[in-house]
Length: 124
Image (cartoon, rainbow, N blue to C red; front, side):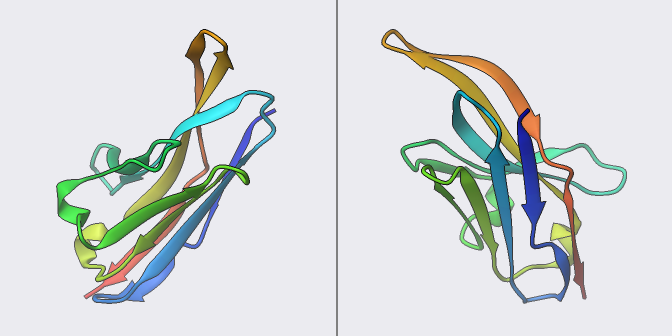
């Protein structure tokens, strides 16, 4: 059974930093794209950053230059370094991983998995 676990959230003052971590385990297949989403109260869940297995990263415009996503493929871990945080970053942050089946013919998506979420609160 696949498990996705996040850690690292908390309360920080504006201008501060936090680092989120995520570990995916329990799959006999391969984890392909991994990403961080967030959901603020009363708002829809949105993509913050995602990273492919080769390290290509994409970011939401408002976090570019402040957040850095990284992964360790051997350990199936994902991190999000968040700097210069502001109150607009307050949300529950979720780790998302895409499980794929790979053969000699390529990779096919199987399922998306979510972590339970970790709260990030930035005070002004």
